[in-house]
Length: 262
Image (cartoon, rainbow, N blue to C red; front, side, top):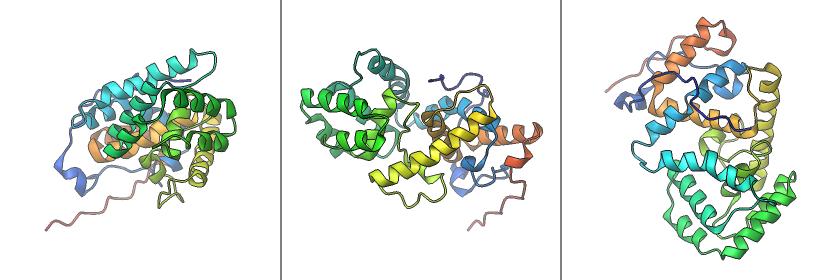
């Protein structure tokens, strides 16, 4: 179930600050990062700042906000409205644009994905959705399309089945222990999804009024990592609130290391 990011989020103004690259200046970090935190309330707070982080990143990538709105809301609605789930050629091309705008831009991939025949895109994506819940088989099917590897294939599947899959975002991968260096292989994706599902199970047992899916967990991990880079003041407010709320088990209260300046 998709929940619109940003509902009830802190009203903070994300500003990209030059000191971001030098550290988090006194911020109380979560022990082991967000992935290690089992308190669903902390995760919910991170989810609530997702739109703020998108806006911060969108200052340079002007199309990002509109593309992300399309991927998170409009595309899933379109895919699920069909008797058999599938993506059209135009949707696959736009999905690639979203992926490259949100992450690392590789113009060659955008050109290659456009070269896929329209009928082949619909046939291949339809078969992939029919292969679920066998995620490995579904990704293998999608990988027959030009420019589609496990990461982009995961974005396709997540658009239609966020309760089964999660997008293979670099930032989410980097935040999970044992998954670096990143390998863009099916085996590595399945390891990632297994850890995401494990996290989902823990969070759903904890509650917080949210039905946690692999996609929601992935969005939170991405938001946390990107907020550290772009708008750490949001995390300062969030983590400070966690301490005040009695969530000390998630927070590392050791003094931050001093950063030497030349």
